[in-house]
Amino acid sequence: MRTEDLIHFCAPARLIIGNGARHQLPQLLARLGYRSGVLVTDAFFAEKTPWVNEYTQAAERLGISTIVYAGGLPDPTTDLCDEATTVLRKQLGGKQLDHVIALGGGSNIDLAKALSLTLPQGQPITAFTGDIGGCKPLPMIALPTTSGTGSEATPGAILLDPANATKIAVMDNALRPHIALIDPEFTYTCPPRVTADAGIDAFTHAIESFLTLDSALFDRAGNPDPGYSGRSPLTMLFAKESLRLCFDWMERAYQHGEDTEARVGMAYASIYAALSYGTAGLNAGHGIAYAVAGQTHKSHGSTNAVMLPYVLDALCHTRQSELAEIAGLMGLATSCPEESARKVPVEVRAMIGRLDIPTDLRAFGIQEQMLEALVTDALAVTRLVKAFPVADAALAYRQIVQSAWEGRLSGQP
Image (cartoon, rainbow, N blue to C red; front, side):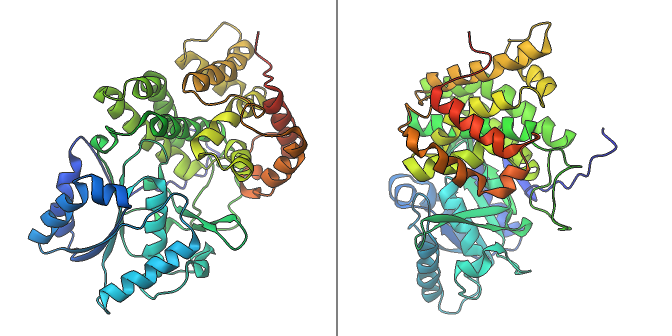
């Protein structure tokens, strides 16, 4: 306990975890009184797996009607959301919905969150950008099929605005799913690249939120119900357990996809990381990764990974004790906390390399002349800049980007 903490912890109303847990969902929704829903997914899950039909048929037997929308795409756009809204409202013909289900990765869950806002009245999603203005979204149920994004426990939806090629955030605690159902069996057939990208995303969520700004210092902008509110001992408990699980299972899940124990371990790692960062928030790792993605259009997990060691290195002074604690989890601890802390970024970079992800910006395809633009774009994500626990965030960002291009870490041999 720290007496200065200002805890504002939000989580899904119901969290269900277990192999085969998806089979409980129809009975649970019937018990809660739901009768009319939309299931948001993509063509792969609708056509190549039995999961959609299994659910809709079981739900129908219990008196729950479900419209399936299988138009989900990676990095959903505002246009896609508005088109889906029009199509679904036409199918509904004036019938009122009482829930939305998302099946898939973070993209499908983000689209479903957005549709939970737009479907009741048919408004465009841009009407809710930033603040949903007291609107009450439809209750949402999230069924994640990867172990990484954590969208099933977070308050926001991220969509791409094709008009200016930027991402917009729709953010409110009302968008947190009412039910997060984690069935590790959904992840058993994830290909290695998806497994690695999702796993390193979960790891980044855990370690960033473990090291981020304290709740007593976090700028809540006067919001009595903030989506993110800084780290506390509560969020750090979840983050630390997620890190432990990642160290145990992430590489095994990547190298041996048939290892069901590793798959279950990473399912827990992902949701624990989400329960941490979904309240504590993130900082420079994600902030700079967004800018890297803007230049390279590479996956979110990989863009996080390439920046992470250098962000950690920049925190070796202000978060020395926490990094030394992480070093203990990794079997790297020495009698010197500073030495222990500086070992962590080096070993994290080695771990990322073993996941076959480039470990510096030069190898990632970033040209040296683009570094200043990358820093500028990263600093534009001000909510993440303000949460980075250093004295001069702008200077730190420049040093991090330069070090990431050169592949330089202070603790490397």
